Length: 244
Length: 281
Image (cartoon, rainbow over all chains, first blue to last red; front, side):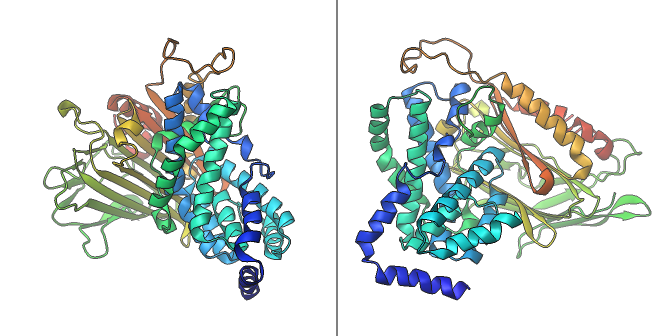
């Protein structure tokens, strides 16, 4: 079964008019309109605001940068490995490893929720890749997999034929996109201000991507303990807009 | 209680080994070896003689494992601990915090192999440096890795904290006013009551600190003019992990070391019957 999948992704790359058609899939995958429920999560920003870790615009920028750094150090290796080896067996191993690595219960649940939604959507959209639906059918019932976000994202990118560098950059992009969006919905910043901020941080996000890309999962680590602690407090919020 | 204690060392240079097993119904050190620069000390009596527990202290010649000196030639001071915990046994790793001096590089790795009915308490913590000298998170690199594997190498808990000075953001900037970070892992069926208590109390303690900011028209983030409550001096969150939530991990950041000692004393006090004394008492 693994052989079939490998041939299939090779065919995708060979037969599609490479770059052009791929861009349509790529843009759709990164578009915020994709119904993956990313907007239910604030990456701990809501808790950070309520505990006064984010009070002003400089705090917000700094917070987002730390989220990006933590994403790079902890999750990018999973995106990398899944995109380089986009087969179900490799994916399952990564999923189990990440389940043990996401020791923060809030982010672990958020990751599983987003990953499941992404796989469901991708299985429906990318019908030219039947392995997505097969994988979902196989593992959904058994409860053996958690469907964590980073490996699923990497897997889909790999199966769609994106190179691993693009896949990792894309993961950092959607992370940034979602935190910035959460900031607007928390009324920390207006939509225009958010767009300005997003562009301002882009070069930092690129720096982080370059720094943390192409690493094995054994090196995955967290670099912003304070952000992790605050995010873990999300369950203690009395009043909340977000799930995490 | 029966079980094995800590096994220390890298592949090439094992500097110490200890084993604790049930002999004639009592936990006994059946093996204890250490060589320079490590010393394992097994005092005859720690706490009540009614308690069936063995205490093993580790010391390192040259200032202690706990204090990490300036790095020379970018070499990293590294230590590795490997432990196997048997069925129905308990291992508690309860050190003082690591203090890294300015420009130091430090790396530690602790690997624990357990059964589903093994019990484990791990405290892993670090302070910002020598406060008297004004050092605040000035070390070059600190890496701490804790891994727990359940029967047949099933990954249960894989955590690695990496603090490295970076151009985008120094460690001090990341830590803000906090001088200590700590992690406490409580795992196993014997410790369910400890887990429940920690989770409840951390939730109660932290819930007080969260409130929705009162919105002014539009964006409230105008200036520092809003005088109001400050950030908590100790911030913590608790997470369950593993199948059937067999483990709980607490992560803490605090302004003072003493507040963390108090937190640990309070929450680990219920271990006294197992250990013979209150940890950090």
